[in-house]
Image (tube, rainbow, N blue to C red; front, side, top):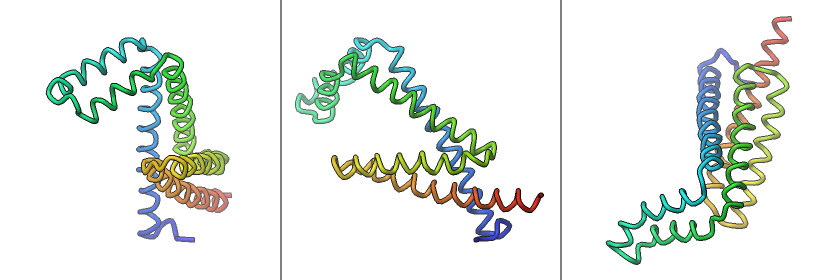
Length: 165
């Protein structure tokens, strides 16, 4: 194991801390996005998207991105909106709770976080394989790095707590 007091050990700890901050910010944004979806009327979302794309479509009626976004609103019934709202709220809340527990150095949260992140990696890898989404591939890569950092921090914390007793 890398000495926690070494230059590499300090750098890895800093990387872990920075990744916790980023994960926390993304989890909070995800939860707020879910809350926004839950509280915003479906018709308002569709009207906003129409207003946003109207200028592009009047300038260029075949604008691919504008047509694609408008098509998404056509298949965005209230049930789909509520699914995404609850999914984002739950997913963000679980990740934010994980970040808080890791930041507070709760020992049992480390293996729990690794299992949770491992589940995300499996889901994201499956999505990449079935749908070819490179976003999910990138998220899987970042979550795998996070698993390694959480594992390392867990071992350092166990070592430090064992030395203190």
